Each structure stands twice: as C-alpha cells, then as structure tokens.
Amino acid sequence: MSSGAPVLLLWGEHPFLLREAARQAFGDRRAQEIDGASWEAGLTSDLATPSLFGETRALLVTDAQDLPVEAVEEIGRYAAAPSDQARLVLAFVVGSRAKGPPKKLLTALGESVEVTRIAIDRKELPTWLVRRAKERGMQATPKGATALVQTLGEDPSILDQAVEQLAGSHAEAGLTPETVAAQFRGLGDRRIWDLTDAAFGGHLPVAMRTLSAMLRAGDEPLALLGGIASRLRDLIRVRSLPPGTPLGEVARLAGLRFDWQARRYVEQARRFEEEELAAIHHQLVEADGILKQGGAGNVVLPQVVARIAGGQTMGRGVRAGA
Image (cartoon, rainbow, N blue to C red; front, side):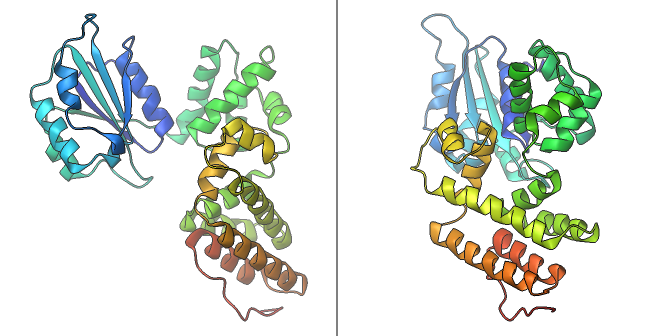
C-alpha cells in the first residue's frame, strides 16, 4: 500500500487482511498496537511528541469499530492537524453486507482521514494464494490454489495458514491439487464443513441456504446430522478447556490438526454455555431417533440448524414420517 496519509482508516470484513494492509502502510516503521476498546485518552498527543531517538511514531488501532465516542473525537481533532512525523492507522472490521464504516464515524473523523477498503474478491483468491506461496519460496499452480479454496473455503486467514502448512510439508512439490489433497485429506466434506461452520457461527441465513442446497442435491439427512454432531463434540471439548489455553494446545487436546481450526472452534464454543451445548446434544439425539424412524429430513434438520444458529428451541411434536 503506497498511501502516505498521516491518518488512514482501513475497513473490510477480514481482520487478517486489514492487519496485512496496515503492515504495508507502515512500511519499515515499527508500530505500537492497541485494541479499539482499550483506547486511552491522549494517545494522539503521544503521536505528536517527537521520539527521543528520532524515529517516526506509528500507531495501529485494531478493532477500531470498538473505539469509544471520545476516542473518535480525539482522533478527528488530531487528523485535522496531524504530525508529519507520525502515522496512525485504524483497522475497522465490518459485517459481510456492510458498504463501509458508519457515516457518523466518517463525519466525526473528518475529511483529513484517508479511507480505504481492504478486500479480496473470490475470483481473485487463487491469484492471491499463488503470490502468498511464492513469497514463501514455494511454487504454486492456479489449479492448486483453486483446489485449496474449494477445500478450505474463502477465509483469507485460514487459506494463508494453509499455505504456510504446505510450505513446511510440501516445499518442493509446491501448491498443487495433489498436495492440497494430501495435506488436508480428512477434514471432512467441504459442504458439511460449510454447513456446520455457518450453523455454529450463528449465521442462520447462510446455514439454512447451505442445508437446503444439500438436501436438494440428495445428501443423506443422517450423514448431515452426523457431521453436525461431530462438530458439536469438538466444541464441547474446546469449551471445557481453561480460558487462555494456547491455540496449539487447544488443537492438540481437542484432536484438531491445525491451529486455524482451534481458533475457529474457540470462537464458536464461546457462543454457548456448557449447558446449551449439552441441550443441543440432547436434541441431536432426539433428531437422530426421529430420522431413523422415518422422519422427513427436510423437516427435522432445519429445526436442528435453526436451534444452533439462531438460538431457537427445537420444536416439539415432530413425528416420524412428518
């Protein structure tokens, strides 16, 4: 990123991409990093104070969407007359459907703040992955990059960690469809992963659309329920671990292969109390019995998914053959 604006607001859906863009914006400068919710009054004054060692001051605010009103006002005042010896970058995370940061925020920050969207379209992911592989000294083919997206989904953070894994395990062969299959075989059917990820992540519309598509395609309802139960068991194991357990330890204790799985599972497990996970398990057992008695998958499974993703209580009175 070539922009030299003293105050830069980066916004997008993926924290990983925002952090990468921020690093580019800072260049060789070493930045102090602070979470938006932890902002302390007077930080902009520190930016304007010359360094004792003549270094350019730099500050990265992650999760800038959590900045308090007072902090936004302070940054707005600073942005109107920033120090030419400092750099302030705000990383603002938005939802998948957002068209940008709130207008009230942009108005409060003022016109002096440069605003840049950070995103990678799906069609650009293979090219991006090839570049990330080459940055690690590993060859990559477009087909290999496409296979990785098809296997693991579109989350840039997960994909980048997968490239790191391949660089360690298949450095000579590179990123190819064959190495992707060899390294990530056993992660489960991609569609079941998408379904369980959306459901336990609380993305109800996505989960319901995925489930509907799988049922229309003829996927076996009991197999889908088995995939949901498998993810639930993993989350129960993760939820039982002490807070702050390192991701590597989470992955090991929960029987996961990769740290990125552990991070995703920790996030999802936090959505539920242990009692809620136990209640979901009980309802999955009920659903399993109903399906085995001839219950309609297109009736039973939507209730299961809605309960998980939307926090709704699974409906009673579903009968075999309904």
